[in-house]
Length: 332
Image 1 (tube, helix red, strand yellow):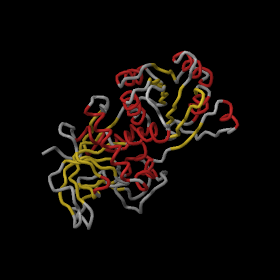
Image 2 (tube, helix red, strand yellow):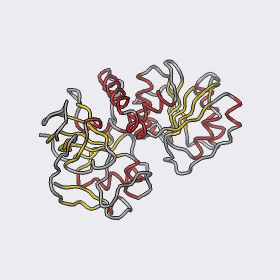
Image 3 (cartoon, helix red, strand yellow):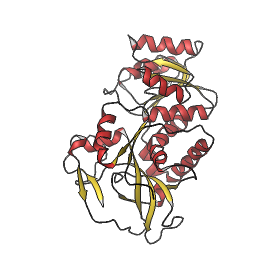
């Protein structure tokens, strides 16, 4: 079978597409014929060698996949060959076959396509945990989403709307605004405006009749972080998800005292490793939101398997609204 592998860290084009032996499941493992794989910003960091978890080389990157169970190992229960599944793995999704465990895997609801399932993995789990677990969101609150047209951002807009929030979407262009509004955003916050520190606060206060944002989800960092702090409501909560805008901001903690605001961070993989039962619960809740029509993965483009490096490059340059998905093999 074919597998992209990282032999030396570098740009997406540095990966090699190798022919390797078919995979065999060990005890407690399953092998999945991968039909589609999702592209996430952490994939770019893994390939470049800048991610916090890096397996020994050569390795196959990729964290989101959807496909059909090919074989199960000893001790596996609840899954059988032929099951349609999605899975989130630490690495291994960018190949025609992948090894997964039952704890990493979820059976697909009827009607959910492989491409949509691959687009509905890590970003939706991340957005849900950021909003509900770390942000302590309660129904009816106002949620400000930074980078609202990206993978995590659009997922956050949809989930927040599905859970009854008023959603403010931070975007930088008309194309991003269109994507955020299609996802259900109630108001648009222009992050390209001059003097973001002042303009973001003014826009948020205008959109909330002076109340401010109860929850801020920040996958951007850089200038957005400091500006969003000033736009928060009393007892508001800001959740740091990542630093897609580049710079890692710092915080003078005395500012937290002024409005009793809180800042926390989210590392989703810690929940996966420490509370796998909660990951399973959240995925079922996301499936329920999909059935209700609240969650609708936006796939900007489905790339062919040979185009995977191009997809990674577009994500690295911030040129994807929603999700890029790679069709690994044709659905049979």
